[in-house]
Image 1: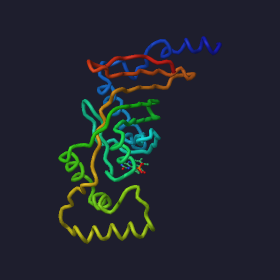
Image 2: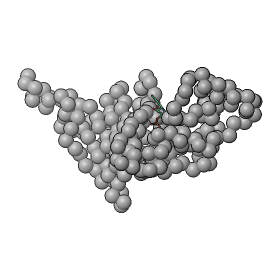
Image 3: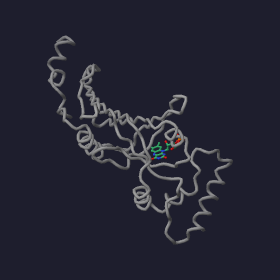
Image 4: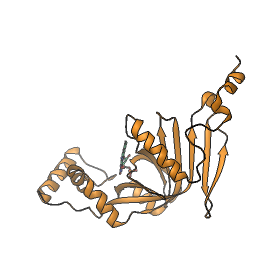
Length: 213
Ligand SMILES: Cc1cc2nc3c(=O)[nH]c(=O)nc-3n(C[C@H](O)[C@H](O)[C@H](O)COP(=O)(O)O)c2cc1C
């Protein structure tokens, strides 16, 4: 069988893959895939690359964990003094890129970012393990650290400071909320004939376009 005929023998080349059926709402589609990924990924399906740009449009990228998802936005948490946070304050446009190998799916999200409300950041911070709460207080994320022992000493100092009492959220730590302007779903297919579905928010709703792989 030639490569071309074997491609046609594969039903998924001619028809949309079973992973999605061009739902009208990309956030609903994301929620469905995300639930599958959380059930199947051996690592952490919430891990996502976050790209930001500084005021000179110089990009940087790093991993974060997706901690919130509702019908209209994606939420992650960080230190508001970190490089990513400084860049988001200067230029509130960002992109996320998920890859879930067990599903063969990539999802790219682009949009505008704003700080999460203090109440929502407080609620998430309160749900974290106590050690993570102390670590948030002890870390000046992305600032130069003279020696690791200084970080450990800072953690111990926070332990002493809070004792067994409640640990409030530091003002310099909280969430960001990304409201998507576009979301692209990519599903692996045989012979790199991948399927790509782009949703663009027109202001009146989501416009759907298929893209060449
Ligand atoms: C899998 C993974 C998940 C991470 N999750 C977070 C996170 O949710 N928030 C965060 O601030 N840093 C997280 N980090 C660390 C960041 O990738 C990064 O090193 C740190 O936030 C400093 O980035 P910045 O200097 O660009 O601000 C994570 C790293 C990995 C590898």
